[in-house]
Length: 94
Image 1: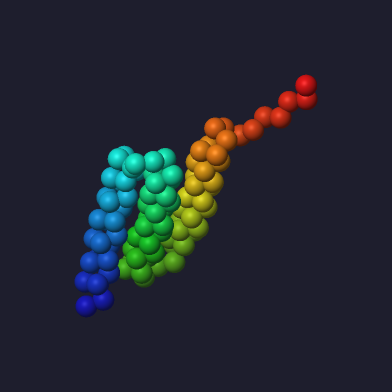
Image 2: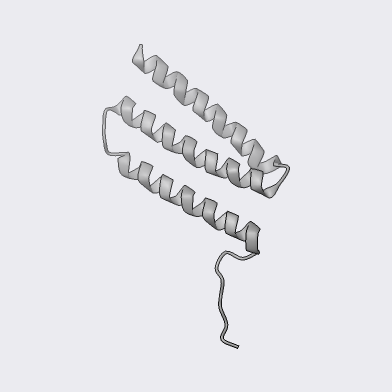
């Protein structure tokens, strides 16, 4: 019974990722696309956690942390790009 519920949740999360992918490709604005990319990262974390539960292992916990950090850094970089037009600012001493 638990395996069926976990499998159903994987399918639902996969559908949510497909919906977010559509929003990334056809989003009305750049900020909507960035939020959709962040949602893809959160859904990937959920998928890896469910797979970890299904396989009864803790080996994937480091992967969850890595995906979370990369999704956060990506969101910050894209937000900074929208705000200022550059990701890394170079200060000049003129």
